[in-house]
Length: 293
Image (cartoon, rainbow, N blue to C red; front, side):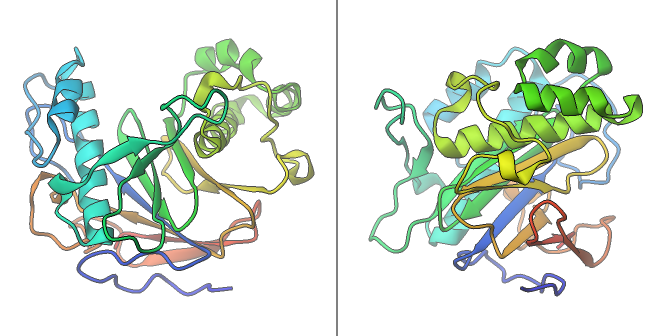
């Protein structure tokens, strides 16, 4: 099992090998301010977000439908980053990518997992996108995958939402020390949403149905769900069917890239922590490599 630090990546991303998962994190820009790296403080302020390139007319309409400038900026940045990354993996112009919905596993309607149309065949490339206040995550793998990221909620939100959890998860949350409950709830909820995304149902399947707590033996059979490093303000997780991934690499996407900057994928971001650290996840046994590259 690979435990080395992540090597410096190629100028464009290469497809993850079988058993590998790539996760990219990016900070959405402040409305009215240029994109910042992931350590730049983000003071509040009104105005309009910079316009990312390459979005479809439907994506632009969806971005414009958000009332809050911050929400518009987050949506546009998330979908631009997704196009830039998938375009790099597939060696296609980001604006030329076509997205579809797979059939829903519950009703067979066209609102299941999102997928990208791959021209010319080739091995499948699966992805998942998530964004919460202040952070975006894109996960890419050669098999079905779900990712979720959530800003840690307030104690009041934890109390209000706890009743939506599986009874076993509720018991674990109640037993957690008060100072740790926000982070514990964040881990529970991101595991659950990542699993439901990968399943293809989303929250149409009630969150209380499945146990995603600390006891691995009680989790859904033939699924692997892993916590991800996401900083002190957020929780994040991925879910894949089958065996645990051998290697999960988490990188910061250079802030200028979604806005047309010429920074290569994975290059050090000014002000970011140099190098990276490889850690073995106690919940999974897999190697998770954190990197500012």
